Image (cartoon, rainbow, N blue to C red):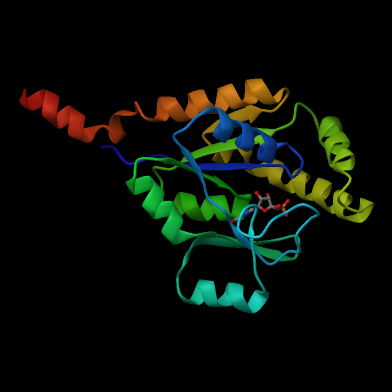
Length: 201
Ligand code: 5GP
């Protein structure tokens, strides 16, 4: 059985990545979502172990020291990281593993895992992004403004990703993402065993 595809999804905070990924997982079976560790406080309704593993800075440092994270990054004054064990186990099982992570972390994954698939999610416009961030109603205006400034910075990195997914409607974006990931399974370099077999035959 082929290994799963490691899928790295980034995009501006408020682009709706979370919703799109949630729907993708609901609709299709072969995906596994990596739950990250973070030092930020839970938002209302967020559950430890489901949305994130919420940990102290000291606990986070320990994970770094034990090399238990695939990557980690500091984002708006908090740390975020991807636990290694789950990712490796699911890829081995043939699951496509989704990492929803910011750009610094994504670029670290790219250095170590050049075969991973990189998708960047944006809303159709910056105006729409601002509307969505305000509509979410969970952050202060100060935090929203810092996330908008961050988006301006992040836009510089878009070409480092393989694919663009514009989140206009969730349904379309889910389909777009699913097709991108499924096509990746047909990439020649992922099918060396089959190539060898058919040559022999
Ligand atoms: P939020 O605080 O809005 O949940 O997430 C802030 C940012 O951190 C988002 O861009 C999100 O994709 C990113 N993020 C979440 N988990 C990880 C992780 O494990 N590693 C990295 N590098 N970024 C993450």
